[in-house]
Image (cartoon, rainbow, N blue to C red):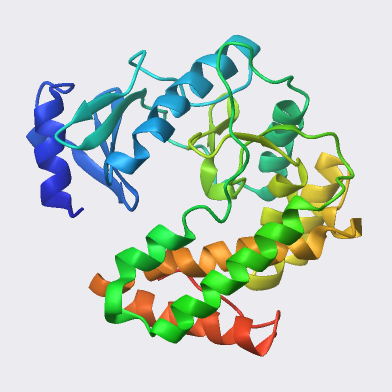
Length: 287
């Protein structure tokens, strides 16, 4: 889905007075537009409809629980010409960049919640998108790399299913990165709620451990995160398994962008090579 197609869907949704004037904020699995006091997410394809519906339900649940998070502006997701569409209250401009310790503050709140009673959260399907992302890459990527990631996915899925957690399982954000926290005038707020799940709390903590090792997060920033949360997931003997699963997913996720972005293809190949070589020190980059 390119911007032109996303704008066609946005116009068809009839949720904005002047859709042509909406500003594109992001284009990935969702196209995110902003206009006035609203933000609108247009999903890439019909496969994301259930996830969009659940994201709206999660937003209502978090609001009732008093957890600072983005708020839905409509009670349900729309389905427009094969694409899910959700409407949100636009957040004020950030007052400063998000720090890892801000993520920890919100994770502590989420990890104290019981499971919602009005809807079901699924397990964290960390590896569930691998097949689709590789399929979207088509023949642009080496078939041997695709087969390698599929085999790696299967191995880590089995290993993750056998883990014994340190923390009590329950609701998790599922993609607890600083980019998914917005620091406004009233403090940090959770955004991008579509990966909310019911699973090992350790999933949320491995995210920043991997950021420290692969993406250049400074050690002092990671230490501030663990101090604020109150525990370092690297002390857990299952950490390597969840880290390996997330690396596999992160590598495959890049593949879907390879057909239209040479930088994404180069980054995909870098990541696959580092996994094949078993080198956890190779730096990974955005593209």
